[in-house]
Length: 139
Image 1 (tube, rainbow, N blue to C red):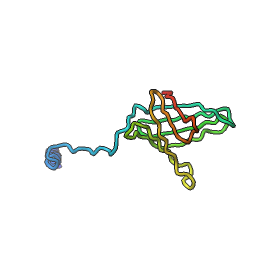
Image 2 (cartoon, rainbow, N blue to C red; image 1 turned 45 degrees about the vertical axis):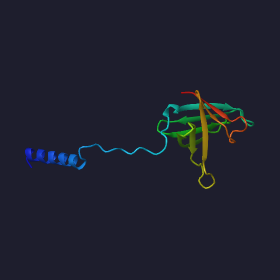
Image 3 (cartoon, helix red, strand yellow; image 1 turned 90 degrees about the vertical axis):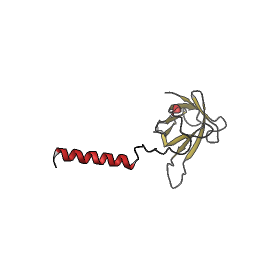
Image 4 (cartoon, helix red, strand yellow; image 1 turned 120 degrees about the horizontal axis):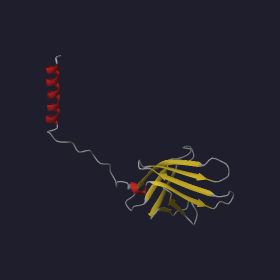
């Protein structure tokens, strides 16, 4: 096909596409539910006492891509325990972290709810005892 013929075919295809959409852009559907506030994305950390180790360091990383990584370092020479999952914000503004199970045969994973307070995320629940858990932003 000659150059002029190829150009005519390309123009015809573009005009046909424009006519098929009535010359309008289509709306992209938005995800259901509240959009997460990625301003809370970042790294958080807390140092807790431990009965049988020098200490217990809890780290939480929330990414702008809505993934979560939680690490527990016990200072006992063993590698940290790592959990991964996802996070979002609920209608009340709380950060909800859903961690995947470590062993799908015996574990259902964890869902932790944190309330943002300044540069901290505050968890109040049974998983960390009466004192709860306050993670302070590190970056």
